[in-house]
Image 1 (cartoon, helix red, strand yellow):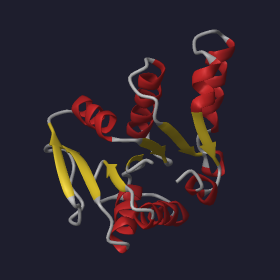
Image 2: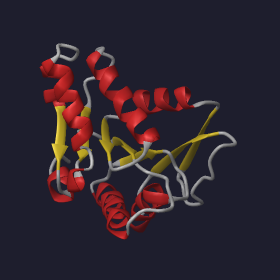
Image 3: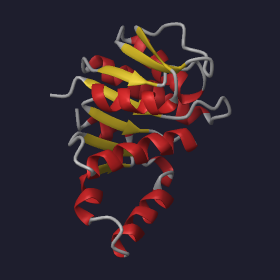
Image 4: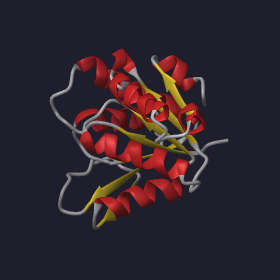
Length: 174
């Protein structure tokens, strides 16, 4: 059973309220299911909402902060400071049993692609879940399909990624 869940998501402060509610709901539900969350730990965007949801259920959350670049959420259970992003990605990989990607920007995409690549390379065999709410990830999924069609990615790796379009379906995996 998975205990440590890494969540990748947006830190932008300019995000539609429904997405913030989704992040909050995910945090609260993971806490109710006794899962510890590992995330970027910032006090903005979907990340803030995720952590607020975790805190609403007295859950455990570790923020993995790149020193001098980000402002940590004030209610993190633990903070892991990293010198650079590569160290942060390594920490996620080494400490997480499951990976979830919510909508986000280039940092979220970078972390998601890194985790997919590490699965392909045999570094881990953990679940990778993508919340494809309102088709947000469809262009990326289309690109991955194109990579399979062109022979750049084996279909077996793409099929290991779990894609859900609703929060309730995503939570069924826990």
